[in-house]
Length: 333
Ligand code: SF4
Ligand code: SF4
Picture 1 (tube, rainbow, N blue to C red):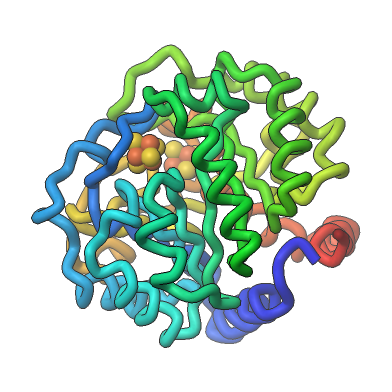
Picture 2 (picture 1 turned 45 degrees about the horizontal axis):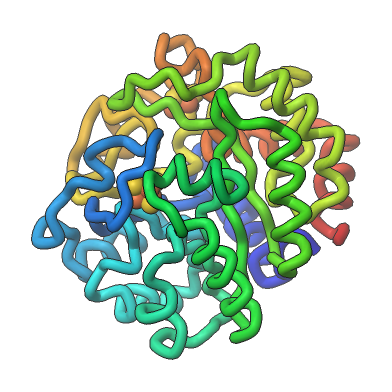
């Protein structure tokens, strides 16, 4: 299976519960950013995400309240670098106690001393290692030599110790698709449990020429589709077809809500039109209909998986062929 059975069942329960309550919009994943401190300064990362001071991090109780308020079954712990969050052990324990699934996104540099031997493997904990290419490319993106080799070593060690390990790769303008395939071959040989490949996020706060235009995204993902079935990619086939320009979807920004040291960020991970610490204000005051339509200029090149995977699921419910395809994809290898 692409996702372990308990994750699939929890997601189905969440959808059925919301369906019975007549909710059309509800969060699937909370992007929880407890801190904006990082030990790297990667190209393509929005500047506020790696320049924050540790003292400005979210208190543990505030993080757990966000988990309760939004009710999403998945929590993507990102930042900043979550390994630098001093209360990480308690945060993970609190999220697991609430029966949520954690995807901990990390550059891998501190896994050895902050995770392995400190926080036990758990079926609700997935370590998601950032890898934007093979050695030369990844170290260039991370602005530091040796990050790639360390990340590979940590994936190997994590698998040996029994952690659920995934990788997360962003495709930029300069990314050669042949290199993405090489990376898939390497991580497969390490036995990773999933690989997420998505087009570069064009943060409103980052004006760089490294992001893909819509046409470039389509071309690169058309190539990626040709070998996607050979690997344990976590992106659905329909999302990959959308990224390749072979399908159209409206956005579902409400499916992945973002909580940061500055509060709930609306409408999405990329655009912070409004920030508030009040969940109800964020949820009720965001003009979801407008953002679903993708009419805003800032949405034009966006094919961010967190905006569109929920659209894939919602659309498949109306299309039995897609629904069968989605189920077959999840239950395959
Ligand atoms: S490791 Fe993550 S948070 Fe840190 S600079 Fe790189 S992309 Fe940004
Ligand atoms: S398309 Fe959706 S996810 Fe992308 S920038 Fe617009 S609202 Fe955000």
